[in-house]
Length: 319
Image 1 (cartoon, rainbow, N blue to C red):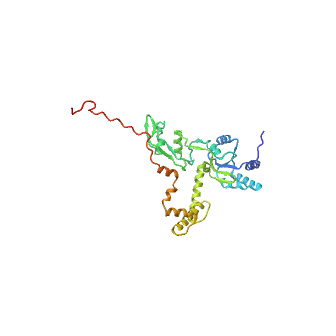
Image 2 (cartoon, one colour):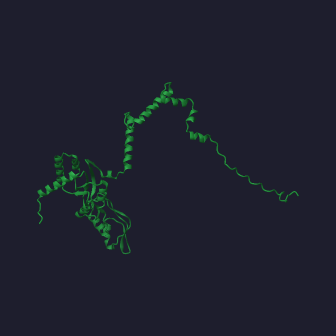
Image 3 (cartoon, rainbow, N blue to C red):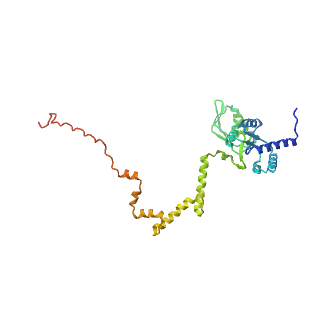
């Protein structure tokens, strides 16, 4: 016979469990669990079993446990989770790859009918075509201003109709019509809201970034730093090569315009005095290719023998 625990005892057990998870794991996914049923949540737990644990609970209790854990251990990193514990959320503690875990969670979405009073997470569009309903059901379509016609004894929708817009509440007429048509427009599951990794909190979109995306963003950042440094004449590691080149160009321009010279400018001034030396500096291969005469074909085209004249054939016109 199982002994039922009191509320206070349940809180103590929950506190111990959460504190042990905070000690063991350093990566957490914060997920919204709106409209997620108990069976669906159980399937998610089974799918993540091995390296991840899903923990649900009251936000006030979770906040209290995190604060007590931070005071006892001195680890203040988990305090970054406190602002995220708003609404119907749960914590997914994991030791696996964050992207793989989030993709696994996304697999467990279940289609759901449009219930009265629910806020539509997406636009709901009724497609055109035969509905299979008899003509007596046209009242539903007339109330919702959906153009229809009777085809072979059934109601047929003529054009696609946007029945519900994202963010609107589902009405009784819309819910009844979608139920008659057998349309389950919504799908619900755990939706990753934020990601916690060793004290850092970031958006789940970061998990979708590839190495090429990171390199591209890093290069764009370096370009912006370089441009700003050059504009305000502030030396940075990124702008240093450009500053040296620009300084060399300025000093070289002064050396060319005056009699002042320095070793790096002598060669340039020499080229400007005698432009013919540019040809000497050209690559040897290019010079040989330009100087070499075009090779004549090894075998000359054989001349075709001249056609025999009429005299040789004995058909001279002057005989």
